[in-house]
Length: 172
View 1 (cartoon, helix red, strand yellow):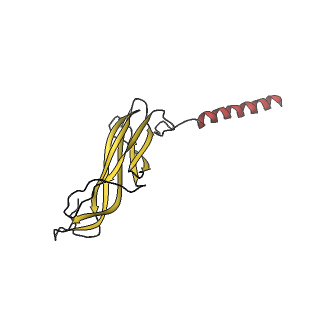
View 2 (cartoon, one colour):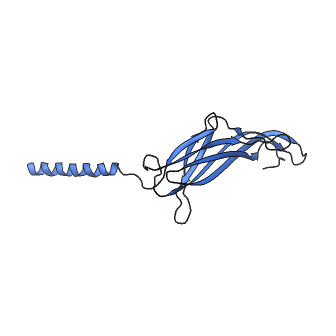
View 3 (cartoon, helix red, strand yellow):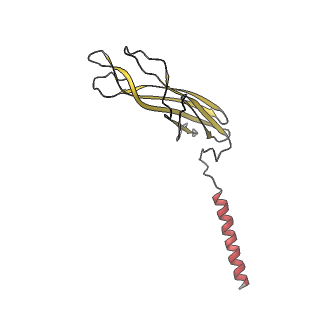
């Protein structure tokens, strides 16, 4: 009976050791800050550029507090293709955003920062030649390659991407 009990204890101990190794395992392709000791800092400002009554671009203005900014990131493969992961952050009252992303040692991350929102802007009517204020989709994107341990500043400007509401608007 003692021999049987010792074997059961040995089996339970071996199973506990195996499970303890498995629970500490991290997926090797994960680029989370928790799993990789080297970080890449992604920071920047998000502004939009509207148009006035004559179609001239105005000075950039800060987007609304809380506007989401998508950060797509990944390590280029041997074929230079990138499978992107996505992290979303929100801008503060100055249009500023910042986050850290884990990066494998000795590698570079391809980082694409983009944002969009619905606002208003002047657009030209293709038949009348006049400008009127219409609902507008603003969009912008910036791409950079950042080496492990580095930081990148992204000056993200959103421009009119599509005019809504009326049929005969000259699209950007």
